Length: 504
View (spheres, rainbow, N blue to C red):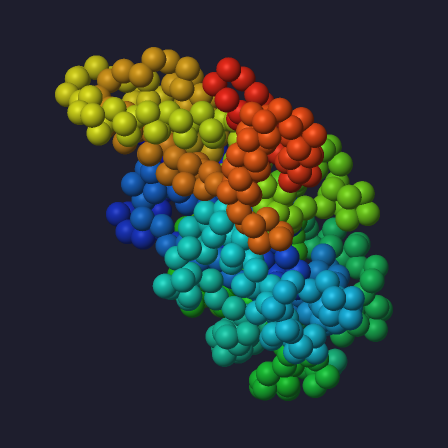
């Protein structure tokens, strides 16, 4: 089977062919900027990249996946090619200072809000915790290979060397304001990834960028590589004065350092296409002299919540840990974020989480049954069972531009069929499908915000309720039911006993 994926650069579906046949696939993903906790929209992009990596591995490719953790360079006006406004780490420091005053910082978080390195490290560790719970393989690997998730603050020498190359080759210049800019006119392909043209970009000059600032540039779309600023929170010595790198520069330098001059895959959210990825292409190709920076560009579209744009003011803004604290399993959250095709806008809903949890519970039950059959020696038949048949359809679907909806449908069909075939072969097929979905091993509730294990607490309360009902103490039984409701739990009584589920 061929593996096909949509390439933003060519605007078409392509059969994936790595640069080095039979060798390692180099994959770079734009990761989080650690000035706050990552929200579920961020995680949709990260998890889609992880799913792509897992699908490629199912097809037999060996993937080296790198994802940066950005701890410097982001400004409040990042949608401009230069960046502008205020340093986001300064904004994060103020927010932490306010949280400390109000006592709302998590227990044990003694952070100096004036120290941007400490602020960045605080949020970086929280991101890694969430990412590992959700099964992001690169975050799990980071424990033993931290270089796979590089921090820009630790790679500044590589960035300075890249700027020096661009200046020496005539692709960058130091302007009168002291800032080093990339000259977009020196790279005729600038705009190919995003569909922009230099004429359109010239027409769009101005806006938040002052006329004085634009006047020192050779073209309005020229973007910042290095800015001398002795007052900036985080700054380093350079040939152009003490200052800091532009955020587009960072990914080019780190990808080159870890994956080489030309890479197979690069991913991010669709909002990264311009200016960030467009600028990455220009500076990387001009520094290396190669026709490509990344052969294939993979972009995830936006996430809405209950059909609305996610917003704190609307009360529909969720981080992963917000939902974990409500008893949502990492498995259900992961599946809800990736099951809608990555090239369509996704509508995240609480009902969707419930549906995902029910599906995963059925898959988990099927796996338990197969493990029991395999352990009992139910093997040896040559008949192909439902899981093996589903795996053929599943693999074809994920190789068709990550068509997870079709892949999941194949698995759900197999679940409804009677168990048949060699139990070990069936189990192997189910595990292979889960290797892409990454959910069965995460189908557990996490600790609640109070630090209690939800499942253990529910079981204790159910035992109390059972005793109360046996003693016909209906008032106590009702009190326990109220406690369960407060925990976000729905219970059902039947002839076999009492079952429970998370009521989101």
